Length: 331
Image (cartoon, rainbow, N blue to C red; front, side, top):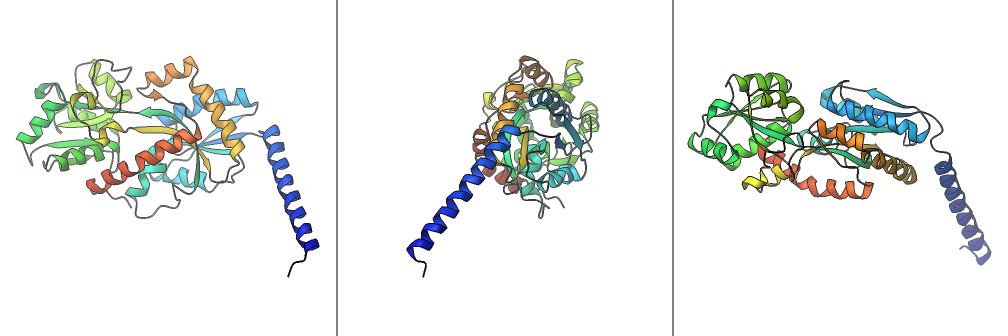
């Protein structure tokens, strides 16, 4: 049995250990960063996530006084790069800039992932919301979301919708409409938005959800008609197009949107996560950053780790339910 003297020695040792740990954490916070920082983007260069990551990296480098490098790790729909970030050392020198698909929705789409989205990351900040627009062929006679709903109800088992891939928002939202309206819509999965929109122009499919960035040239030229946008507010690049919610569609699938965000490997020191999050929020708040994000058809966010975690928790059951309803599964 431990005597009084031994107990005092044990308590003293524990106190010294805690003080040492605290001092070490404070020293790290004061000297961080001491070397270049890497942002893993799990997609190829040139896409929206990559563009936002590079905008962030340039300004973050200026603010932190160290190079911030982009590491594109494309593959398996973002799984490859996300896994690399999850397994990186949690020392504050590797971060992930990704779509919500890889760190939220994929856990419902894949039977098995090489990482655990809820366990393997510390959330840093949402950078931007990524709503999409609902499109139809201008010769369809459909002018709004309720027209499309009526058209679907009048033509069960006859219509089709496109997506830029299995498990994408366009797929899940289309599947939700099919199930909720008991319409048995045919899903046409494409390798990207461009071929999908070309087929919509050619009336090979009946409707599709797409990013404003890709769809706007088709809308501006009159080749396609935008009849709604997702999310809780209108897009600055399509200000006259009402949201699905404004048109009476209160379903959660049309309220939530995709997003681009930053995360760190789990167990990254909290003071580092908070420091980087604060810098990211300041960058997103800059007028030039806001302008760039808005012009891409996105909505700037820049929230705290705590706010991001609350969003994640609120959207978790929505995506779980929608994926289950769609029947979508990926290997």
